[in-house]
Image (cartoon, rainbow, N blue to C red; front, side, top):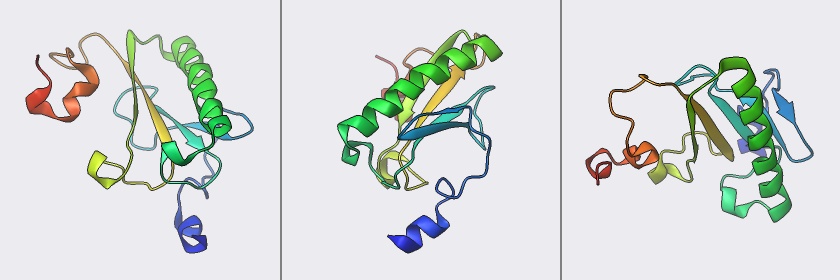
Length: 126
């Protein structure tokens, strides 16, 4: 566990926080998929959102709401996608809890219908 923390880019982040609270902090994504894409990150090194305490989960969700307001004021998006990748099979590449808040803009993709269902493209349409 200690060696994981030493190499974890979130535990060793020097990026400026958008906001923070007792158990989480928000930063802009280093590889954004849209203007304003941000991450809500648990301060405790933990891989799985469901392994956080209820207090830690609530702090992440409260900060998600606060970050959404910040993004709305700064970028005026038309919508949002919110997601959490849990484990490698779901696309998690940094093994530290983080929630994505992705601002969406009319015209940023040809067919946005289905939203997060697009993680499995063949099943997006219904």
